[in-house]
Length: 197
Image (cartoon, rainbow, N blue to C red; front, side, top):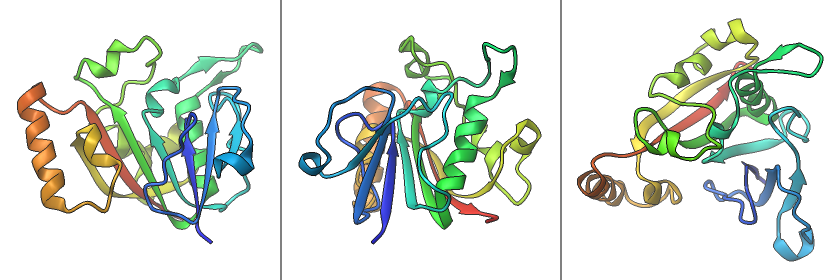
């Protein structure tokens, strides 16, 4: 059975690849009956803790409106400097099977949506993904462990990303409609494949 993990899932984890089993992680202390809700939930602060699953456990991982909440750098109480964004990208690679998919969707610079929410502390650009792709990702100089191949990186409208199986013409029409009404799209979509395992 295929397994999918949604990071920052809240009460409704997404499963964009239609995996047979859905798992979710969030910082919120939610009292959930796993039998009743139909997915495995773990409370974890991914800024300072690893993803609480074993290596090569998931076929896919998603992060919808999540990465912008992970700081790029922080000083721990012992004075050590850590890079939580680099660490979470390493963790995502660690829990994916070889060839596993990672789908991220996040508001990005220079759109106002990247800055409006006061809990957004990581400003993604249309070039940020380059630190994590290729056989020798440049993020390794900051401690990134892993490598991804980029399947797609594009500006996207929120309504388009939740159903990856809708016809491409429908996605294109929604994207154009969003651009006309709002003066542009505010989110970046990354779809990666885990390589180098």
